[in-house]
Image (cartoon, rainbow over all chains, first blue to last red; front, top):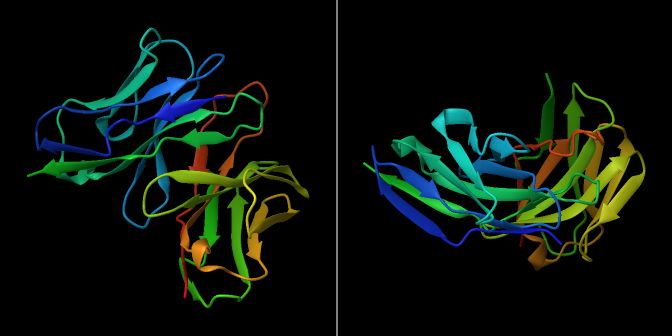
Length: 114
Length: 116
């Protein structure tokens, strides 16, 4: 079975500093990994995904994520945080059975402090 | 381009009343459709998914049901709501292409359901 873990419920970072939101995964085959962002009372917005190829994936709003197979991690990063980046971030892994379901981590709340 | 519509945005219903939440997708055909529930503003739980008209798979036993009467319409229902049904319900769609198993899902704006 596949799963993802987001070990931090809350991440605080000062505006302008680099940010990292952690995610580790467990899958039996090739991992298909995703990051989503959710603003209050809104749906999830897709940020980026890793399917194959370069380990560093670039996405929307200046975010990127680094796939590390040996550490089974897919951490979300941004070089310089903005106050507007404050939101709930979800890591997800795709179902391996073919129904294309996504299974989500428990989320990490990012707060960027002005 | 593809869009997904979900309504209503908020709903307050008494315990024991029925529920019907609707989701429609435009700009694509034969999508995979999903209903998720998010409790307490955190983790998402997959409730139902559908790979075609009339085909519904349930991930967890519960007081809810889903139907897909048309290719791009997905409905979440309940005959009698429970207090525990309160939450934020999200509809999503994804491309049903076997060769592209790494496709992402696209979400609607969600429905905040409060059962009182």
